[in-house]
Length: 419
Image (cartoon, rainbow, N blue to C red; front, side, top):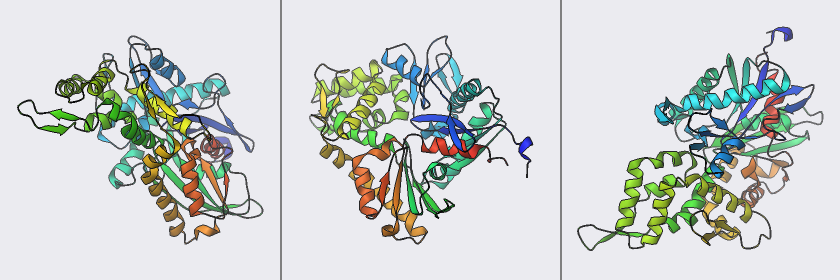
């Protein structure tokens, strides 16, 4: 065992699909580094613009909102384990791949943490989902290899991984009984079953997860409520006859998917949209699709969907809707809580089944769970909480540290990671 004096300086990093954070332990308390003025969480977003360094976080988002010339990217974590991650591509005249893009993001997190704490971090303890790809074991294994390569390329000498919901256990308030961490991130839903005694001693009883998260919720809402306004489901005339066929779904599905949006601005996608508009029975709708691709408004639409989802989740919200004025004055898609529930019902069922499997694997009956500890921004959806309350009827719900529980746990665990 390495003696305490020789243990490397280790930074706990929660590299998330939507947001990231980093921290260390100060005594028995987590200290999350201020990544931007007044903020310990950092949007996992990057922006490339000509002849300037890559921008990250809220600076990247501001560049998009301001209409600056360049390329915005988000949900990079979802590419881990896929062939897209290592494909070289030209961005603003530079040939690179997503390994290097993620590495630059992590290197900036490292640099900001070092500047804030006046220490050099040679090692990292990184969170990871229980499964990056729950339906593909090969991609699941490759994703951790990919993420390791990103950390090494960012300047860390070594990295170790901890399941994100197990990290959240470390930061949960101690209470005797059985608890279930419900960690709904941007790209995955993860669960850890744990038991604590009266002294606070904790035993992990099992962890499970599924590749389904907040960005998938956004995608389904967009497909159901926004893409029809851009022509999804519209009829397209045959150029050589009177027959019509529905517009192909690929462009619309990719436009609703955070990580696929940048790939749609290529000439072939724009030509395909133009051809659909040319022969559309409803040209107004398809011309909106053409405008989105020509003006590169895909991420603006995605942010509008995200805002609409948040509004529809607020109790007693007045006339919740997805505001699409970026496309057309007065254009909006109604999104009542009932409509959102309908769009997400199948996913809520899948997440509930994954939670139930976590308990079944440990041979624990759901009615024995004393508390549900909700982690991650998407865990705050009312429909999700209702599904989990139905599964575990005797459990109380805790969500006071939903946004920082994983990062706090990683910070507390970092010192011991290489012991």
